[in-house]
Image (cartoon, rainbow, N blue to C red; front, top):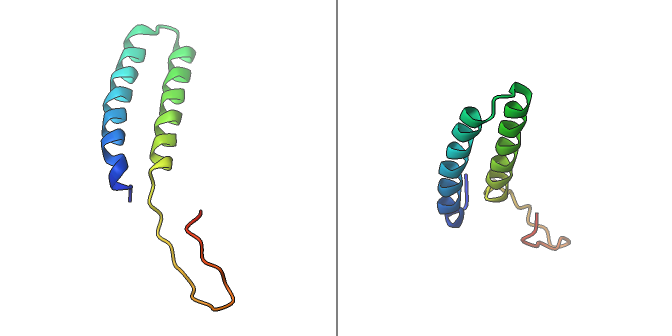
Length: 71
């Protein structure tokens, strides 16, 4: 599901984002600003997860195709 090199970064960012979410919930008293801050934090966490994803690839072997390890 995720690259093994990214597991440590994902766990650290998960802890950091959890702390930031609770801080935003406690410190920001304006409702729309609190929700906006939480959505921005969620967006950045999803970017980190997307960066370290390890998709399933199927390779079609054909002598006329060039195969490169690029997404």
